[in-house]
Image 1 (cartoon, helix red, strand yellow):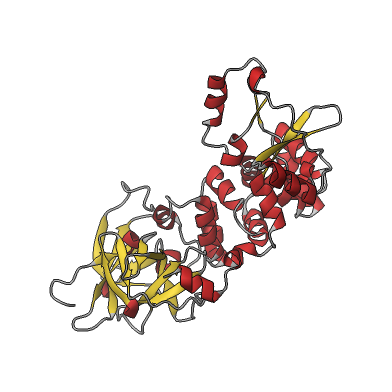
Image 2 (cartoon, rainbow, N blue to C red):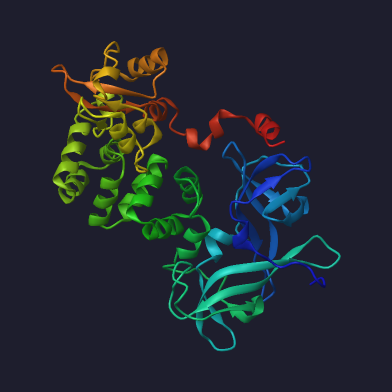
Length: 400
């Protein structure tokens, strides 16, 4: 290695912004690609997986990286916006190397990989993995640092990276992505292998997994839910927004629906059954049955205290029903539960609403529809894969 060449531990690059020479951000680092080599030769760092503002993931070769420092990556500004596709000889650092169990060559002891570092070769632009940061003892992960001795060893001092591992942990991967918004973490899971996706989902707590499931495509939702044990699956469904959970349940076979509903708390199961009784693309099928409701004599302070709940989505917190009597808006007609999706969308567009009440014939409030639910049902099913319908030329322009 070059004398004095900086060593970079790759977990520090998770989510780091990538900039072009003019200082404009082109995206964020979501993973790194290495190529394993025969024997104990260190892997080459081929490049970065960068997520553009359009959510498209592209491959940025290290030959187009001019600097990695101070929490940022500087590029040459030349980007190929073709979607990244992993090749058989390549490995993703965050997705496949972290948390892997490998063996120390000298002692034969199994250790867990917490991180890897790279350095640039002398007089060249090639980068190689040179060190591995590991933990001895049983699997612990990044959140359990008091278990087992940690040490940094040469790449050649360990073996086992090229072997398929069953039951690979996910703690260090989760530590790498713990600050991600649920939609971004969902995007990470979507691009993992089914095996790795199931391991990460199993390691997430119920609330975090519920938030992530709401952002995943339907096929991924069903796959993940199907791999959870019955009671855990029911707990995650209870933690989801009721309308999203009902949509997911509706996609399952009827026998599986009943099994999960029986495992849920009676009140939550009742909400699910009520929502599932409406057609999916109606106000009743779209609504959340748990809006913020206060007594007519409640104060503004009471309302503000309720909407500060971090578990509420912004759209749901945007309206409080039966708010202070003198501030009520009784000119706006509510939505009927059988109002179709076009009618609901037209209502939102006409009145510039982000949330709207759903009321039955007796005038009782049934729930509230939010604008994000309307958009989710109006966009094409594969909208998460189409980068908001930008073509490659537009994506290249956005990327600078």
